[in-house]
Amino acid sequence: MADDSDMLEDKPSGGKKNILIFIILGVVLLAAGGAAGYFLFGSSEPAPMTEAEAEPEPIVSGPALYVTLPQPFIFNVTGDSRDRLVQVNVQLLVRGEANEELAKSHLPLIRSTLLSAFGAATVEQLRNPTGRMDLRANATQALQSAMSKVAGENVVERVLFTGFVMQ
Image (cartoon, rainbow, N blue to C red; front, side):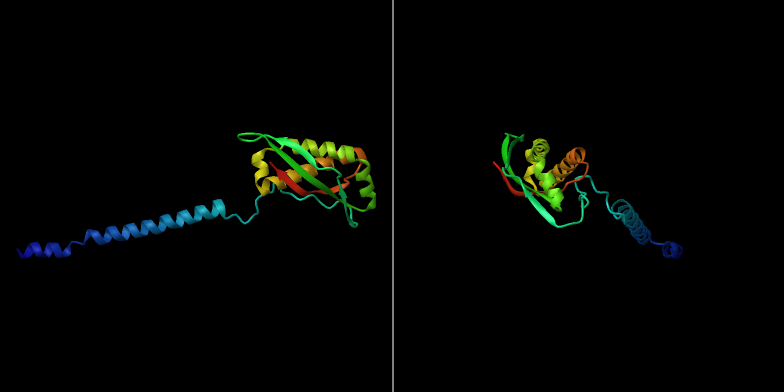
């Protein structure tokens, strides 16, 4: 019987080996998951900006002047359950007196272009501040394009909402 007890003492325990294997396996899996997360989400390069997020470049150096559009824009937007009525007061940021005069002389084109840009909006877009900023950026781009075709230069630097009501 002494031989049987010697055999038991020489046999290594399987429980300690299994725990050690599980610990090593867990550390390797955590390291692999951390590396995958870093490569997927931890890029050092900033995410590319969409056209709506990009701020327009300053048009001309000079004093900032504001052209107030005399009447608010009133338009319908489609929604999830029903259409809504939106009223937006707009001012235009221009640089220099020459651009201010150009903007004032082309007010019908400006109103038409802005109304077209506003008409493409939806209720879901206008409910949150980011959607309103996107709408303002789209309106600025549309207005700059239209004014470039007529006046030969970018006249309006930014479209500003000075009043916004949605019912």
